[in-house]
Amino acid sequence: MVKSIRIGTRDSTLALWQAKAVADVLYAITESTEIVPVKSKGDLDLQTPLHQMGGTGIFTKVLDEILLSGKIDIAVHSLKDYPTVMPAGIKLAAVLPREDYRDILVLKNSADFLTSDTGLVATGSIRRRAQWLNKYPGHQLTNLRGNVQTRLQKLQNNDWNGAVFAKAGLLRLGLVPDNAIELDWMIPAPAQGVVAITCRADDHNLFELLQKINHRESWDTSLFERQFLNTLEGGCSAPIGALAKKTPDGYDFCGGVFSLDGKKKVVIEESYPSENPVKLGARAAEVVRQKGGNLLMKEIRETL
Image (cartoon, rainbow, N blue to C red; front, side, top):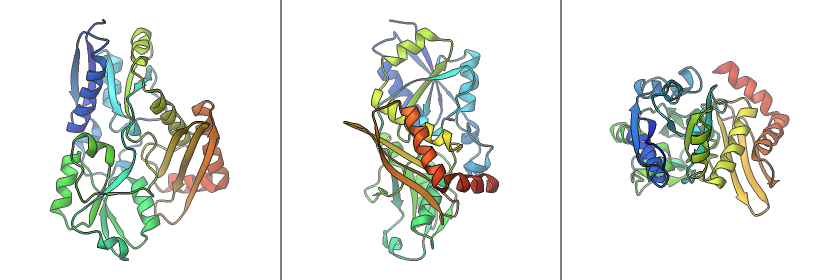
């Protein structure tokens, strides 16, 4: 057994659930844990669209700071929100088994609007926005911010047809409505559904300890997807989707980039051999760049 491990987390209900899940897994290798909740910039400002809030790290920077200060020993994140370039002095140490990676549409009433040229859908993600407009170009999108419960309540309080959520978060909190529709056509955010644990880079003993609880398949597919995002030079709020699945022979991968208005996209679906997932993610991104993704990313950066 090792000493008590202080676990840093955001203070939303979902983030605290994730921290508790990590604490439960750590129970086998540590005498005790302490959960230390904090508020992030993204939690305090619920009005500004995420892509307008100064780039990556909106939900993670405060945890990085207290981790480096020594006030906590590890930090727990939704890996899809964590920058692909790790801050100096911090390293990714482990991930838990991936939850359902899909996005879902929670309906206000009926799904009839999906066969109409008009509709009003809420989401705070420009990735979801871009893919929705690609499929439903006549629909309108409106910004939606806040924790899971707040967003569900906003859907009920507004005249929207529906709102898009990550299924993983709703599953973890037992809040998936009966009328939710799984969006199998929407490419998820890189590492969506993955709970990650970071530690200080120089804490070698703790890193080795955390590797004992690391879920290898989720780790490898996350590295693949995050390197795809990194090579395309897209931040966590970029309109980029990526999904890698392990197969007996390697990986099946689907990923791509969409214009902000949904009118353009460069998407690939390919299979890769069982090699280093970081190298594979970079290779897949280069394919997208060569097919026009580099020009599309240039347009996006000039617009955001």
